Length: 74
Image (cartoon, rainbow, N blue to C red):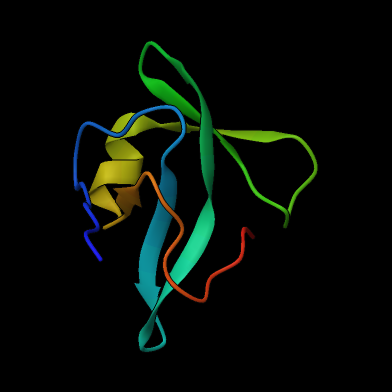
């Protein structure tokens, strides 16, 4: 199975992951991109969380256009 990951240049439709407690944790999906912010939707919160792009990149997130194996959208 081929899977591509990005550490920069995230796009609308990408799922965000961060390595926590020995595994890759899903942190939501990018649903909006405006100027210098991403809008991220997660099942953990109602609505959309707006985060500055530089913060997302600096905090060690990776992005994939697909969910990881055995992952559900959180």
